[in-house]
Image (cartoon, rainbow, N blue to C red; front, side, top):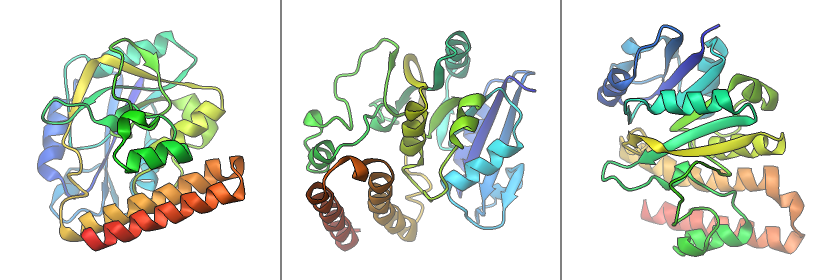
Length: 267
């Protein structure tokens, strides 16, 4: 068994995939598996596993995970650049803390700002409403003032998710009901429910060219915008609806439909 398996799911980002692979450190007890989701830009030639159709982010990663052998699994998306010692630092922390099921680093956008997806709270009806109204500083979903010390979080991002295999096996890895978006939030929710910790390690980082696949064409842009609202409904119905009375759920679902209609018009 390898110490670490790095699984990279790729879709039509050949140039960024090559740059990502080049940025990865080489270790004899690590393995790298590239899974392609039916790309049309020639990047499938680089892949170790080629899916005949685009089966989605969760299912595509699960294919790579099943083929991997590592004690730990790093889910890494191809439009990222990994800096020296980032993976090693997060991996070493997890080896020393057996209660941690998954961990991430600081994920930066190209301008140096934080990609909020790497440090999220689980959405509540009120928090989600404030978030989508643009009042993020009052919402628990995204954090504005983040400590520079290692600390526990609700959810990381699938852009860089270092996962203990025993934890992933316990919760069944990524839920394939999610095609694109939301599977990382769902996965972390399941980890927490099973008693595992999810940690944020800000001393090391990656750069994330966010949305490279989603923004590749007008068709994918529209699909991403509409899919994100479908994800809201799916996550809420799976994990939160049973915790709230009918009238709260009715308001939440109505709000999601309004957001979806607005995005459909403006995409």
